[in-house]
Image 1 (tube, rainbow, N blue to C red):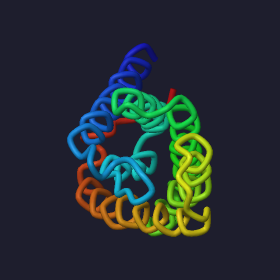
Image 2 (cartoon, rainbow, N blue to C red; image 1 turned 120 degrees about the vertical axis):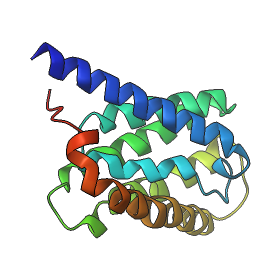
Image 3 (cartoon, rainbow, N blue to C red; image 1 turned 30 degrees about the vertical axis):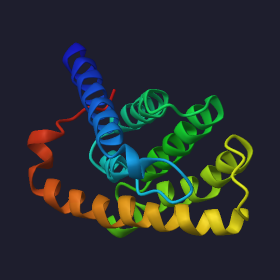
Image 4 (cartoon, rainbow, N blue to C red; image 1 turned 180 degrees about the vertical axis):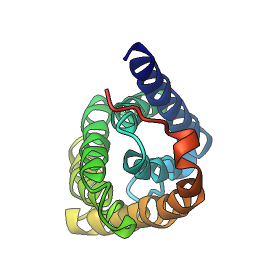
Length: 164
């Protein structure tokens, strides 16, 4: 039991660290009304392990903080990723093409309001939903599914049983 908890924490920490690094390395395209946050490809990982849920949340929180985001973005952007990760985990036994839908939807709905009210970006919210949504489809949908298919054959080695 202790080993499972330790493995869960280690996996969550590793996922958080990778998310932060990807957000920082691709910072120019990770923020703003037109964004493709490469780190969001990791939102597919709850299909493999529930440790990805806190890992993605903490990774997004730290990535936003270290990237210079404003407090509402740090809070609500991270909550959007948490919501997406949780519902991706709930869909873990469904068809893989359904797994990216929760983070795409949660970010497409939440992030434009953060952009409008925190950053005072004066674009119509539906337009920002479109631009953020396209970025999420690219990062969560395309890159996330590529990551899924790259990891799926090694899931038992990489993501050992981490049910806490």
